[in-house]
Length: 352
Image 1 (cartoon, rainbow, N blue to C red):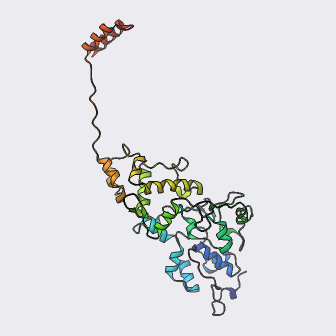
Image 2 (cartoon, rainbow, N blue to C red; image 1 turned 45 degrees about the vertical axis):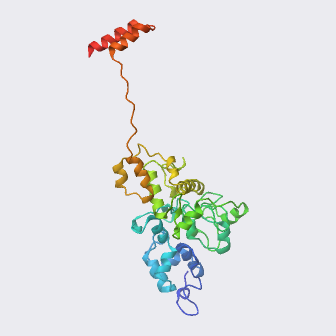
Image 3 (cartoon, helix red, strand yellow; image 1 turned 135 degrees about the horizontal axis):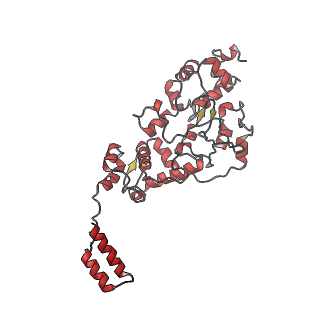
C-alpha cells in the first residue's frame, strides 16, 4: 500500500526523492524511475496521484497528458519546457514541420508502439543493452525510426525480447529489473551475451545531426530534415521511390530494426547523391504535372517537376502500306498460301 508519508512534500524528503531527469531521457522513463523512488508500482502510484487518468494506456511520450505536466511541475519543480523536451514532440516538430498539428499526427519517422489497452503490439521502443544496464534509463533517441544502432557503443538496438519476441514494455516489468513481462527472462543480460559491435548505418548520423539543424548534404547543396521527410513520403506515395520489398505497402515506422536500416540507407543514398540519384526514380508516367503542383513539394524536388513538364519525345511516323501495294507485293513474292491471304484481304476490304 502507498503510505501518505511517501507522497508528502517536505525539505528533508522531497517528492522527487533526488531523482532528476537525465539528458535525452524519455518522459515515460522518468515517470517509472519516480515511482521506483517511492518503492511503488507505477500503476497504483499514478492512479493514486491522478485518479481517473489513464497514464499507461497511451503513448505519453508522443502526447504528454496535461495532468502529468502539472503534477511534475507542482511536486518536482520541473518546468513545462523541460517536460516538453523529454517528450517526442520537439522531434516531431523538427521532422514534420512546425505547422503540423502534433495532437492529430502520428509522427513521421517515429516508431509506433501499437498501443492496445496497457499493452504494446509493436516494437516501437528500441533498447541498447549496454546503455540500459549502465544508466537504467530509456532514451528518446531509441524511438526514432532511422536510429537502429547505438551511436555510443556501436551495437545494434533490439526492439523485442530475444527469447519470446514480445515488445519491450518497461511499465509492466518488475521495478529495478529488466525482465520480460511475458517470459520473465532478463532480456538485457541475454542480449549482452551475444552483443557484437558493428558500424552505425551510413545515413543514421546524418539524420541525427539534421535534428540539431544541420541539413543533410547533397551534391549541389543541402536539404533540411523536414523537407527530406516530406519529399521522400511524396515520392513513395507517387510510386517513384522504391523501398525494400518487405516494406512496400507498410509504414516504415512499424517495421523492425533491420528493415528500417535498409530503408534509411536508401533514403540517405537518394539524398547524398541528389540530383544524380533522380535517375533511379520512376518519374515518367507516374503522376501528372497538376498532381505534382497540387502537392506543393519541397524545393529540392523542383527538378522532378521540370522532368514532368518536359515535352514528350517525338515519335517516328508509322508507315502505312495501301491495300493495292500489299496485294502487289503478295503477288510478286508468292509465299505459301498467298491466294488464300489475298482472298481474305479482299473480302475484309469489301465488308468495310
